[in-house]
Length: 280
Image (cartoon, rainbow, N blue to C red; front, side, top):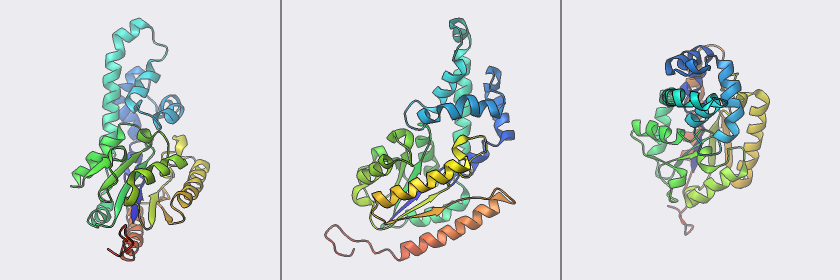
């Protein structure tokens, strides 16, 4: 069977916390981006993230490059000569801080460790993200003593952790091509039930258009339909929605515990079949 995890807002709760207004403001100043006119969260979302998300989430251009390009748009040649190198450093620092902050939440570790030890279970991270995220996510799993590789470098094995990043694949998780590519690359590695754990953007910061309620609902509906189509009805979605009220950590732990029980039950009931049709 296959377990598919979203990353930001699901495996990584800190990725969302980074974008909270107070913390984000501090990082804009600490990185030096504030010195180039990007000092407020509203400007960050309105000038950088929201207008460039389509491009950034479906191509190799990268978060750092988008920051530099959008901030320096309209600069004179003289200003570019004088300030572009400093802007590049500030953007690189900001992106590095964001990615290092995007840690896998500790509450997921017992489930991930359990799944990683199951020879009949494939683990996939399916994420709409920037190009730089693939290596960062790979590093996060390595810190947990787990080997992960980009889906684009996979060879059809049925073991390990595969990182399916929209920026690498050229399409996002609400598009059929994304799941077809996953199915095609992993081949026999996807057998039995497919379980998707995802917040569909619902846990994102309010300033991020990606997390708007109507978009979250549409994205969930489209993804469920695509999974049913591509995996012939063998897929099940386990939503990871946090209310945002009360203790976020406790709420996340309770939800992760419930998801863990569901997945363990699915693993216990899964009987792998070899290619010749016999039971393994």
